[in-house]
Amino acid sequence: MFTKTDRKALFKSPPTVFTDKLISQEARRSKALEEQKRRRAQKFESSRQLDAFADLNLGNSDDDGDLEDDPEIIREGVSGFVQMVSQPVETPSLSSDAHNHETVQAGKRRGKPRRKRVKAKPSKWADKCMYAELLEMNEEAHLWDNQSGDVIDGLPRDLEAAWVAVAPVPTGKRCLAVTHQSAGIVGISPNTTLRSRVLGKMLLPRFPSSLPPLTVLDCILDFNWRDNGIIHVLDVLKWKGQDVGDCETPFRFWWRDTRLAELPKPPLPSGKFSFTAPHATADISSQNAEPLSNMPTSERERYRFPYPTSFVPIPYHTDTTLTSLSSLVIPMARSTREISVDIPVLVSPPEFISHDMAVDGTHDSVASRSTTSVIARVDSDGLLLYVSHASYEEGTSPLSCWIPNKAITELPELPSGSTGHDSPLDVFQRLVQRRTVRNRQLVVGLQDSMDI
Image 1 (cartoon, rainbow, N blue to C red):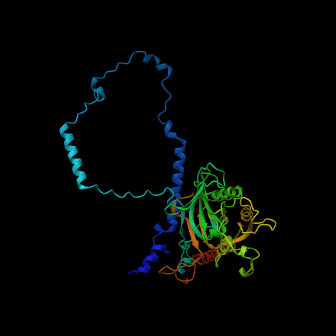
Image 2 (cartoon, rainbow, N blue to C red):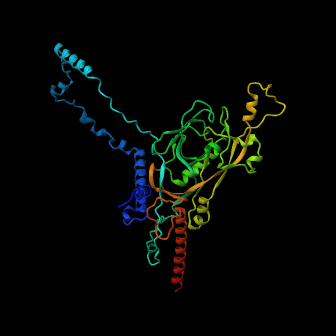
Image 3 (cartoon, one colour):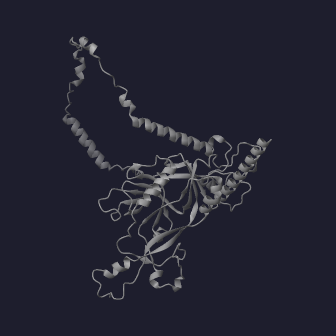
């Protein structure tokens, strides 16, 4: 029997080894991809509206005109018109009214019935994000037998040709950024809301952004967004009302980067700025970092963003060959990303402006409009893999696989050959290296057979 800890671990983490090939991740991925192709073909056929032309005909020809000269005699009785006659309405009697009145009075004496609790309707944004499955990998020795032609290591068979990698995936909270129609100026009038991944609830009040209306983005709210104002854009569902989720993965990522680059620079948040002392474990530092004790008081105080202002796309890689994964993608998934952001700072006004002579808050406006560029260091949370030919799919899907760079300690059983400190990214790197060596051996063997 499993203990309580083992049951919790099995619930949180999927199994890494499947004995039945019908329920393996590879089989479920193929089935999901076929289902997407079927829905796409069905949607295309429905858009052609061929059913509207099914009942059309060419009509009677001119030769049939002589046959229609005789008047047509309708042979029907009056029975068909009986239903059109309105039925007499029964007038309730006085005795029935009195009986109903007594029943109502008796019900009032008994007390009002309890109202049934009506469950709140789920939000239309609930579970709309494409949530990746943990990549199921295996390092068993017998699966790497050179004599076996079918290697089941958990890596996709078409990893080098039909996948797109996203790295480094930042740490933060997964959410949807939804923009609405706004009558004000873009970037000043509040038009954007953030929705949680599971329940679709609002994470922040509506705030202004430079995004166009009727846009839905799959995002990751940075863990330190209060300090850097960054929200990372992972994918795009809609842009200006145009459905982009039905497109393939490389096009969606290209569209995301192109459209975000065209947006104007976001304005600084309006209103009164609030400056607080920085945390000891802050991830933001200037390029010329100095000890806090040597910095003036005004520079030691840090601005806190009331809402995210910078929509930063996450890098993606269409080259997923084994060489590119080993030399570029996996090292990026382990590294810390550096992003330059503009942050307001509290700067004293010029000496010739006196506090007593400041008119209409001139002192506050001069101080609040001063900005500085700092480097925001974003920690990586791992690597994401997307099927190239797949469209965006709501909910958990095997068409996207997640490889974290931190060890999973809740697993009750670890694969042989791995230690408790190995992360899934470490296992992924070893499997890529093994597959590279195996491919080289196959090439050498093929060349030797051709020479013979």
